[in-house]
Image 1: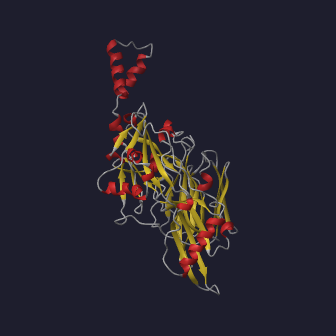
Image 2: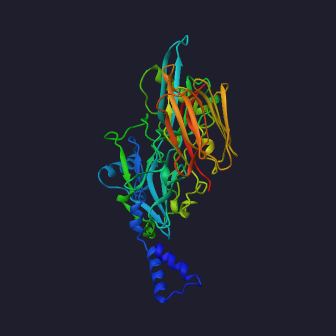
Image 3: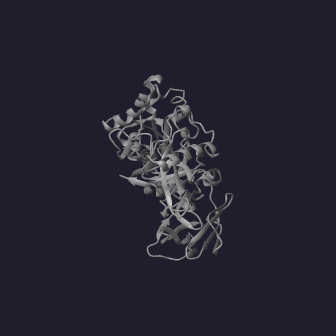
Length: 493
């Protein structure tokens, strides 16, 4: 193609006269470059995604769903997709290929979106507050929010001009999603490899165990029978307390879409292509089961009561009802145009697993950052002494993201235009029997750095993928930073 491009450029120049043979060569080669097999291309970049071992609701063929009478779509029907998969019958993934072959959109259907994921820390102090008679972290289902019939998910892959490699991918998540550069994705057999969250089936580029979408305010939880913090989000791999586990036991499933692909152009006359309604019936929250069974005992009884109270008083959850069923992906705004819907064009957020201890109150900057599509960092502040007591970022148009408590020695770095955090290094140590962040260092793309705290051996390094930057964190903190993991945001063009 380099040779053809050179000849084409010379032919456009008055200094070079092209004969018929040269013009014919150019025409033939350009036609060959535009000639591609949609099926081969779709298979070559077909994603693989890992399902949670406790996942009950596997992808279902959309035609199977519509052929079942609406009144017969009961729990046994929703669970049948898992049994079918384990018996060798995989649901088809619909692939929409753009005319130029540079955008591949993979639509995956589930018959049911299960219970919402949550995580909390619970503690009851002894009568004179010297010892703990009950202390636990719990990851569990909340089934009075999020449950609905029908669930379409979407992975869209953008390719290079010559269609030889992936440049970026859109991963759907709760009706929106994230565009991420290829550098932020894992791969398997040269194809994108991602993670599907338990019940919600939202896609993530990394396995961080649990991803908090909302942290219920500490004010709302204050005094509720020992709940220190509570988060609502997606369970990616953590073991969870659930309504029921899969029949036959838990099983780690890697769903390879390549095994059963169906081109969008081949379904034009099918019943499900012409289906104009919603994919399922609305679900009434009152008909959904209560909290999953927890281990018996007085502490667990108090925990159950506390969770029910939190569901009533927390503004983030109060009066939330379960959503209705979705419409078809080929008529959904954004999805049908290969742009990913409400994803701010080509921007997105990704994660890296956090490091540290189990103390402090949980936090995540994701809830604030996800509302924005551009991230311009202006300032970094570290407060530290023997350990790191506070970290802060200031982003243009977003404000301050601070965690921990200040008051100790302060280091401050004001960033120049176009400067961003490319790397963070974290040193861990033991304090009061648990790990905390003893030291931290941030390094920008211009080579400048800022640090604070006391360094210990073998610090952990988080480097932003190419095309991304560190724009916030998730973890836990109190008077000091207990645990920290980076949030990566895409760089603006």
